Image 1 (cartoon, rainbow, N blue to C red):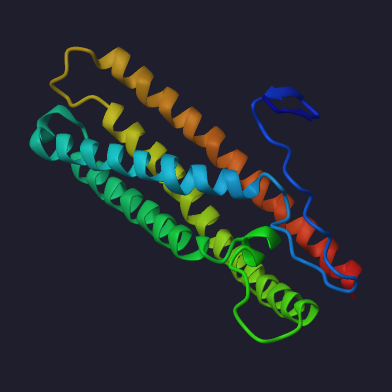
Image 2: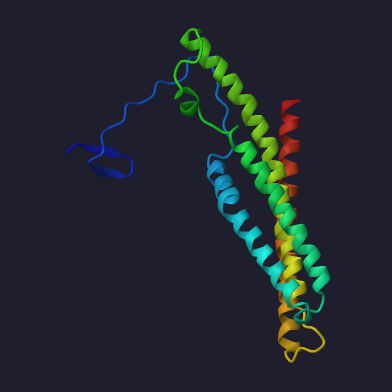
Length: 211
């Protein structure tokens, strides 16, 4: 049995992997910015967004089948349709742009694809990867904005579904739920706005430093 020693401890049965050589001098590969961003992007596009979109569709169907149970069914349905649309935009852009995000190891794993010398080949792949990363970053802004907008609109829709119809025997509890949903939605919107302001401020500082 071979034993591999890692920074986290000893893993029995795992063979030591050879270290990949560093890129040649003068060749720079682009990064996604935050190193955890690719995993967060996959979790949002592959798990969170489809789940929330499916929930919105199910709630929309429930309201359509029993409009008398809600105070403002038409407004709630409108907001839910808008929510689903925003989540679908986020999903489509996220899936389409995911192919633009890859590392040096992934770019080199395809082996030889041209007759260039190895260093020139890697320089070409690094240039293409850098262009793709910039495209991915621009797409992620649209993914991020549409996802956050969907979350905010979904919160407003849930608030409307909590409001009781005039015939409801539980006026107090449902109005309390309505108020709580509005408060939580306002907090979420405030969080989103704060993050966007911070992003724009950092972007402005980066542009000034480049100038």
